[in-house]
Image 1 (cartoon, helix red, strand yellow):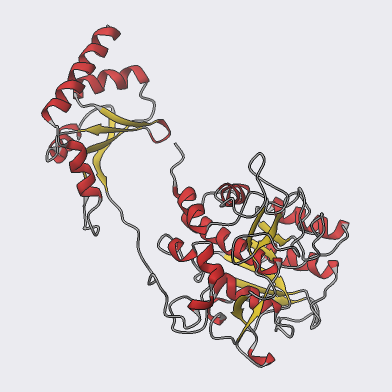
Image 2 (image 1 turned 30 degrees about the horizontal axis):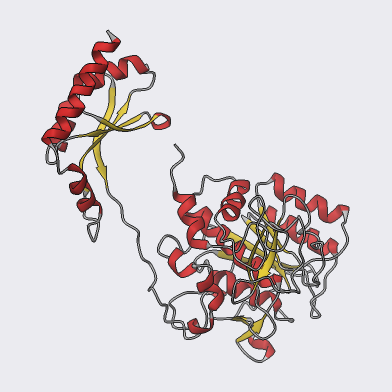
Amino acid sequence: MARSAQVLTTLLVLLFFILSPALSSSIVARAQSASASEGEYAAGEVLIQWNKGVSDSRRQSALVRIGHYVLTEIPRLRVSRLAVTPGQELALIQRLADHPLIATAEPNYIAHASSVTPAYPDDPYWVKLWNIRRVEADHAWELSTGNSGLVVAILDSGIDINHSDINSNLVPGFDFVNNDADPADDYGHGTHVAGTIAARVGNGEGVSGIAPDVSIMPVKVLNDNGSGTYLQIAQGILFAVDQGADIVNLSLGGGSTSSSLSDAVDAAEAAGVLVVASAGNQGTTTVNYPARYESVMAIAATDHYDEWPTYSNRGPDVDMAAPGGISVDQVWSTWPTTLGHNYDWEYGTSMSAAHVSAAAALVWDVNPSLPHTEVANILKQTTDQVGQFSYYGGRNDYLGSGRLNVHSALREAMLPEL
């Protein structure tokens, strides 16, 4: 009996393709249409979802009786994608409407990417942002610019809450240096990091951040000299976790471990919060803490030409790299207005970590169901293997798995899990 069904199915497949020689070109033509109209669907395809509990044998027998070739099976969704003569999709759907084994039958509807920003933003400093273009953030914006429900906590010297290129993205934070609720930036570093993460795109002003529609939480843990204690940083991490941050950016580091800092990182890990930290700028063969902790993403730097700069710490703990610049070719971003100007140059692995934190937010936006560990894996697996050193087993100690590619990461995150 099973062999008879197999022979009949084979005959139906051959007959289908004899009668429908132009099927594949028809599908391609419909899928490439310029814009999505209401109800637009792929020609020559019908999706059926089986009722729960339908056995494989009953499903196969039903398919033989239905008489259409199966193009794709997705068991997790209980879905079969059937080939049908173009123009007969709705007729087949109607015929299957009352089938006792089928929950739904519907067209394979088409969606299109929504471009929410211009290809070349009107931000006047766009030409200076080599780092944003290098990681293909401008291409990634066709897929996502983030959303305000995603929160990146920036544990740093504070943020200029009045800066017009980032202030609309702010959520309440805290100052653990002065122990108050005003995390103002009196050093500049935190505001610079914030601009790379979330400066507004296409607003006719200043610079463009990688994730311009995410929220940023200013948590001041560094003083006006750019220094802070491990306990302040640990308190900042716990605050960010308690206040609902999805990502903690730590563009800072020290040479020693600490139980309080380690425990705070562990608390973030347990809460499903992704922690991203800079590898450090001492040019040593070990990365700083907290980047060296296993659950933290340790980010090294690349320059304008995708090479490893000698100041960037290296070693087996480096996870990946992102643009950090060098002294003669730095990263341009926002700066506190209280320090004399609105934008300035900075370079270092601090800038690199900011790129990865922003990219993580975009990955989460296109696939909110991902656990934080998978977000990290996607970012590492989609890097470009650039630089002057060879990669062995998919990595090296200088750039980890390679340099961040935001567009590639988003495309990978959007792939269905079959």
